[in-house]
Image 1 (cartoon, rainbow, N blue to C red):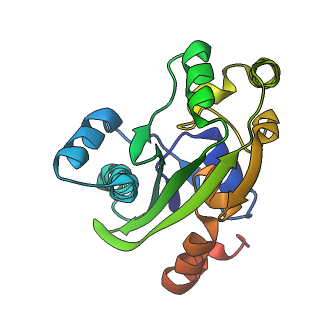
Image 2: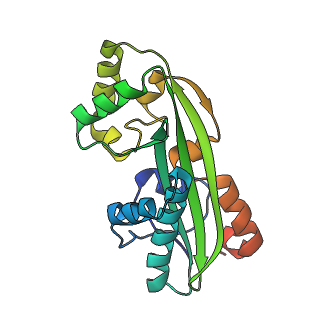
Length: 200
């Protein structure tokens, strides 16, 4: 059995689209407390994403010791400063205005845990540049997006109307969406190929 330690709709959809069978379970961790502890230990944006992904996978693996458990997380940073999911649409608007005309970084981590042991982990990076959009264009995008942007560390969805705010993306699309699928599938192919096979 493969378990995704997440209730993220985007991550579930990405994994479903591969045809791999899995179940999804929320990880019983306090992400903000875990993030603060990682920051206190000196972790950078990539290290925080990896630490959170590990914590999620290990927490679910404790309940499912016989399963392969996927943990994933994503961080965003602008000039070295971490960004977080906005509390409301007004906060999303302010964050997007900060990103306007600038390039920021995303780090997405994926971890596989089996039998309580980390069997695989990877951190991928992407750089995203927004064009110098007008406030009217931003308001249009936010109206189209609604509360969907509140679930993103960058306050946008590249797979939604927010794509209109961007001028360039350097990096893997799945990394931008928060689940580095290609490294994950490669790891499953090597470590547990039976999980990639359809049920008889």
